[in-house]
Amino acid sequence: MTSVAATPMTGRERVAAYVALTKPRIIELLLITTVPAMVVAERQWPGLALVAATVLGGALAAGAANAFNSAVESDIDAVMDRTSDRPMADGRLSRGQALRFATVLAIASVAGMAALVNGLAAALTAFAIFFYVVVYTLGLKRRTTQNIVIGGAAGCMPVLIGWAAVTGELALPALLMFAIVFVWTPPHFWALALRHEEDYRRAGVPMLPVVVGARETARQILLYGVLLVSVTLMFGAVADMGLLYLGAALLLGWWFLAPAWSLFRAPSTDQAMHVFKRSIHYLALLFVAIAADALLLA
Image (cartoon, one colour):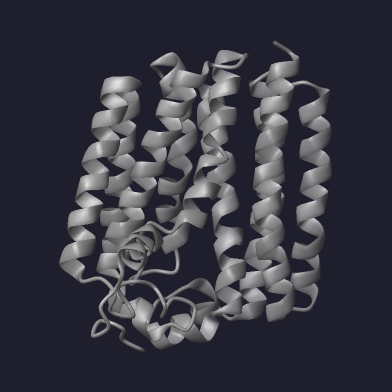
């Protein structure tokens, strides 16, 4: 670990360090699912004010959860090449600074949801932060290969929050959108874990490739991929989606499963990263198709 704590930071560098603490790229991926969930719930555009309040609250909540995660996992981040340049791992911020920042973001997110959206959205936001920090980070990540399977539920909460923001309640289509992200999460993260297997082994984190090897991990990625496509089709039927969504779900499902099959046949770090990157595009395009279909049928 290279520490930069002894080097005074400029104001801009300090702001950049706090922003990095929230892991903005992860926030973007989480919020991709929020607005389409709102559109499906409303069957039309829900209104800019409500969308903006929900997205802002969700971004603050995700930033808070990620900052708490960084504070708790600074020891892991410091020994992993992939994460050694994070603000706590390299000494730019202290644990106390990270925890205070995360607490402020968490309070702001829940309070903002309660004031500008509704009580259910606020409660789900608070639960999402709790689940990610306490259940996943503190309870599961260092203890079981199923860490990302169970803990990944936190990353599925934006669809429920988006639905609740519009309707004030939850319904079966929202739960199936939750299930789509839930089933998508393990193959997404396991593909990345295959690329960084030695990092996780050095850090003592029992990610699936560390425990069962590349071949079995690739098999699990493929199986989850098949289940994912099945869930997307089930959602289409339950949510009464149209042909646009059905075609997109089938085409995108094939597009995701093709590299997953190649990874299963010949596991490699390069192919694992191909699956990882495609999984990001897959989720984004699928939820764009969800929103587009709902708007066209409105």
